[in-house]
Image (cartoon, rainbow, N blue to C red; front, side):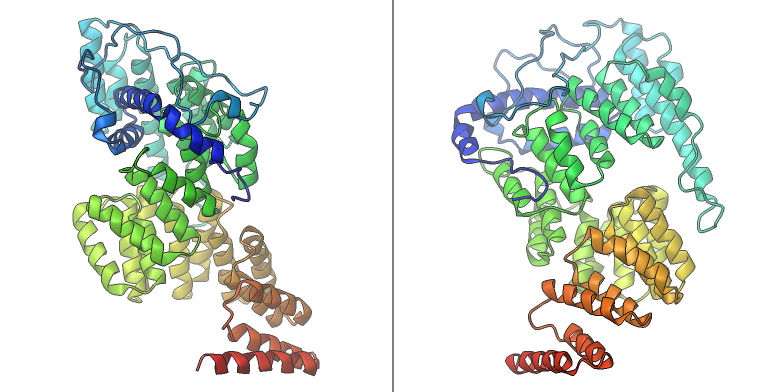
Length: 544
């Protein structure tokens, strides 16, 4: 069971699953098709891709449209007549088994699809705006939708203006790379003005924009509120869930947030949100793997590559590298050119020292798309494993230029700077990682290492404390902290840290035992020193 989130499965859940599955699948299929259409119409390609892949993961026999259903094109701008009242959402259990909602949790709201019929001029304008948006010609989009009254037109105008201003701000920010003059994050003066235009909006997609603007302004609590309201108005927009994930700082906050959602914890979307968020926080448990296994069952979404990647990522964070790699092998057997998750696989291959496979993947995916940050991370790991740290830094830097919020690239770039003894550059890279996510223990650990290289042990201890608080059962962190205490002559603290390291260490570990024996000898505690030496002898004999 997860230490942070109540398990989403139960005996009653499994019993009720068969009773509700047929109706649920029909609801999900209709919801996903609506999501694909509405997200595509607004240029939310990542959300549309997520919905389309989940739709295709449902067995074909369960997603056949009714015989009387009319065909709709993906790029439709008019909406067939339909009921304006919300349909029942997908539940894996009946309402009687759902925990009590928080009294302030918003209710699901009917989605306003806009006018049922748009005039020919507005249809043509929206089509032109959409094409320019997908071609990333954001500056042209607002002019095309002037005078359009539909909600999709308003969204595309605001979203394109935001992306245009954000790209400009990021470009200016990168001019100060690796200098002390670089701000913590890009400065976008246009966001306040854009926020004023959506401050009182109730349309779920405009609420998503409001949440994005608030998050960018570091108004996290307000961004969470806007994201939840967006989900209440249109639950099947995965972009809203992803933004909510980015705002959550720890598992306790996730637990507190679940009752505030407009959907129960047993809803498919909430379960997927739970898995994704715990993976982002790097604290999944066996509960999340079991949840992935159930959702990947034949009666649910057996072909969902997204769920498979979440499962592999959870295994990676649990240090089950063999099973994680096997899961990725199954994913790429089904979709050989899928880039999502390739960076996680490259980390696994790096840790397991699988140089041959890492080299092969780096060459293959460079040919697929060299401008994806995940591919740059893959190639960076390839060069790092070969000891070519300068080339690795080049590719990790490229990944951060493609996506400044790409946490792993900043952290791995810091590691490479440590390898070439450039402590100051390493500190800058790790600080960027911490600014993106203060829950990333690897960045705090890296800062400790960098300051140790500078012989600034008190600073190093400060950052090691942060790292061990976030990852209390990581052997390396306690060992590094113990060694740092030993360097400063604080031997009692060193002993305590190394004993903590032994709790989670391999039973055949000898290095930490030898360190403890040495420190006890220096403290004139010979009985304790002898005990640890005996332990080393026992381990060596058992390993023969």
